[in-house]
Length: 361
Image (cartoon, rainbow, N blue to C red; front, side, top):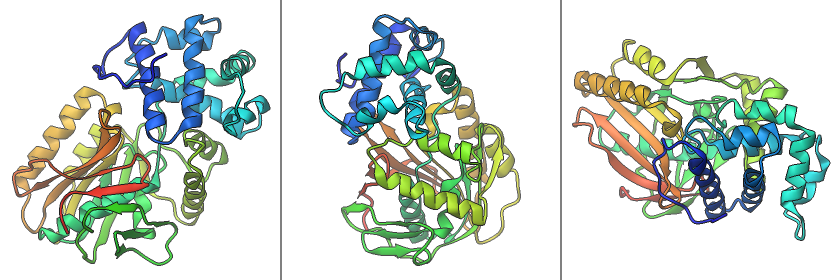
């Protein structure tokens, strides 16, 4: 199967779209230093050549849009969970990135023996709740404060998963030498910073609230294991972060509710906003999973609320979403008053390893 990323319609369906989703995921993983995950996805793709299991047949005959549904990562998450739980020990050499392993034979055997366990992993999208992405949120808030918006933020997050990024007030950030947050913090982030540092400002939080259509309770070991299964295994620091997030949630759980993204945004924007606060909608690697009708509703709600925004009660929209041509993510901000025109502040690694700041200091 080709490992060259192909630019296609994310809403494309059918057998060809399924194969493209897998080849694209292999290319994307390799571009983001995820060799092991690329191996697993490639071995899963090989099942499509002759789908003998119900698991493979369901993938091959996927009725939705496999790219938008992140179908390869659904399947890979199930395989990784079997490895993490010790249920399929034959996977260990692959996850150790050992050479001279017949990946296709190993994965095919695991699927045959654990199909009943794997099938439910196809029922919902991956939960990629990565705390490292929050450095981008903080940098964007510093930029907004530098533009004169009140530096006290009332944050709303869609696609919050387990709410790890709703605990950003507990983390410490070193963003090109600009420090934000408590020391040492429940977690500390110092991404490789490219370009000028962001502005230095004291910022605070009036609220941190999020939603998800399938929220994850970090204090439940079974749910925490599921979240770990979506972490790319070669990125060891992300497992350390997950353990830190679990500990933080045990101390005080994030404010997270079960709701669709559009319902949540509309309801929260209708809530009175305190003077001297900047209300912010934020999300990371979520927009592709939001149905088109909900994207339209969210955009309309934000633009309507933006038309009502004032200098004492402004509104901003911070989005860190994938550019699948360049294999990285773009930090884009809109603000009201001010017209709401999108402005790209930077580019970033998928899991927070680096940030390329484009907005000046």
